[in-house]
Length: 412
Ligand SMILES: [Zn+2]
Image (cartoon, rainbow, N blue to C red; front, top):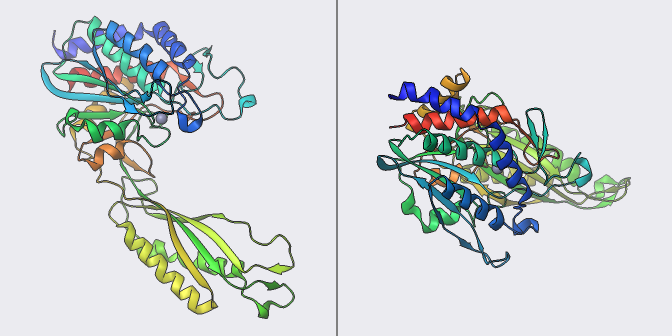
């Protein structure tokens, strides 16, 4: 059977997995995998369950545990399950085992850790983030196995810990200690974000810079403003002056939405408690999302220059402090094999044209890209992650599973 004839067979098999997908979601939801940073027990129970299920399919499962004495057993699991292909180059699907806490419990209509099924919608903590990736990739492999197909490339499912709290015990651990598992020739898919149409393939992230800006003026009575220096008024001038950053760092990159860098004043710290005192200390924060073509130190240097102008103009003292600085790695090339394979598969399964795009920042794909490993973030995503009554649409699980199966079958 050639691959054009084999894909309909896989699609048909996957279409028959609806009940089994619900059953797997049910088992995953009830194994609470909140990480220790969020006062949870970690991912061990969920990982042990999945290891058995993957072995039942005939996959070889290896754990690459990250030591962590905050959890029972003393380590966080990072499973890699392999289905050998005709060649050693791999197609990775990397999903994460951990889930975020439930948040405000009374906002949930039912118990977050007991799966609720309503029509095609499955509710529970983790059903989308990131059981969506786990379930869709698991059943794509099962379809290959049941159809008796050996793919060209080796299929590698990675199920990692600690994605929600920094990945140091998850993907970062794997890449730091077992980098030999990955090759630039591999296709790497991270099903952990996307859009509701399944047409967003995320290949790049903006750099992220958070700055704390502290202005020291002089507190005084509000009836005698000349005796002080009003830091709230200075903050206002400063914030307006910072809008100049938009003109200076004005490159446009159509892969991103919005296509430009952004510089937004966000949080402001409380100052005086009463209305009739002029504040002498002002603190606000700037959230900068900067296109990868700019070095963040250039932005910091320019903010400091603007701060000096404000100091001279108003007689204040300003401290610029970096709270967080993440220089984005080079983008995954839009014509890389993983992007092409996903685009083709989305076209076949959903009859839609997917586009490689950039986002504002914050996925684990950055860990891969930093090492020159081309990763693409993709899934059909209704953005219910981290929300109360998190849900996933069973039709998206089926469709995304078929997309993975198409990639597994056709990537050379
Ligand atoms: Zn996630």
